[in-house]
Amino acid sequence: MPNSFPEPVRLGVVGAGRIAQVAHLPAIMHASSVDLIGVYDPSAFLRDGVARLYESTSFPSLNALLADPRIEGVVIAAPDRVHASATLECLRAGKHVLVEKPIATSVADAGTVVNAMRDTGLVVQVGAMKRHDPGVRFAARATRERIGRIISATFWYRVMGSLRPSTEATYFPRMLVDPAVRSTENAHRANRETYLLATHGAHIFDTLRNFCGTPSSVMARHAQVNLDHVWHGMATLDQSGLAHFEIVVDAHAEWSEGLNIFGEHGSVTVRTPFPVTLQASYVEVFDEATGIAERPVFGDTNPYKLQLDAFAHSVRTGAPTAPDAVDGLEAVRLIEATKLSTDAGGSWIKMQ
Ligand SMILES: NC(=O)c1ccc[n+]([C@@H]2O[C@H](COP(=O)([O-])OP(=O)(O)OC[C@H]3O[C@@H](n4cnc5c(N)ncnc54)[C@H](O)[C@@H]3O)[C@@H](O)[C@H]2O)c1
Image (cartoon, protein in one colour):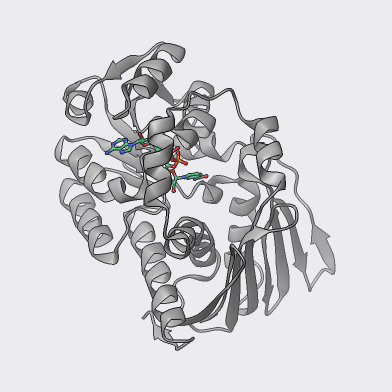
């Protein structure tokens, strides 16, 4: 696979906030498949500071970044509400796009991006980077190829509360913070039920589809206890059994994310660590015929770097990438279906 490119893909980064500084920019420095040309953020403090730190160009506008002929691809690490419009502008300017999840804030906007991806033939990859965690890659392949049809699948995504700040302080690099940006962005996240379902649903629903395909139908219930939110849902799987999903924010516990899948001939277990630890998921694949459980070990594990390698590979070779805009659209469909179902008290929503 990637990593041995004669010519790295030259990148611009749009949005220089938390995830850009914590994950994308350090990953770009690690990856030999890409080079950083420059950065745009509406905050002059952030774009100038980050550009200086990474010895790159500070662009005063998205248009200025897109007008730079050196730039071939754009990493969009801006807020959710900007994803679809910024992706469309990049595609119009002939640039490939790696856009953070969720690809859009509505199915309609995500559909527009899918059409633009198809019309331009450019790469649109979504930043659901867990697909590039080598443990997840191994487990998804084992699920498709080794355990037969799925009987039962369970997915969970429990975001730790009070342990999060100290864990982040341990792993995060020193960050540039613009307090005006923080307060604007916090205001946009004021509807926590909508925001939390979209931002965490984008991950768990992409994982669910990666392992089980698009469900035939879904239902879910939502509850709130104090400031904490929980969603439990069920999905009927095409040609096979049932899946359950659970999102908890905050869980008063350690980070807890993973899945269990029981198939006709074996089972797959995945435990995914807090993402910025950059560790691979723990994986166990049990094969009923041999009675042996396999627990692989991985070396190159940074999912943010590996997703850049996959992006660069697709840009250079034209090979399909995943998750692409269609996968992004399907994740947003599941987010909207979950909201529709919870608003109706748990009714079933058809997906296919
Ligand atoms: N994949 C992951 O692990 C992961 C983790 C966290 C966040 N995210 C996603 O990354 C995105 C950014 O999240 P964050 O936590 O870094 O937020 P953030 O608020 O820290 O950073 C967003 C940055 O975008 C800038 N911005 C605002 N409007 C813009 C525009 N029109 N054009 C360009 N930049 C603009 C802001 O000034 C800010 O600096 C979100 O979509 C979020 O869902 C992904």
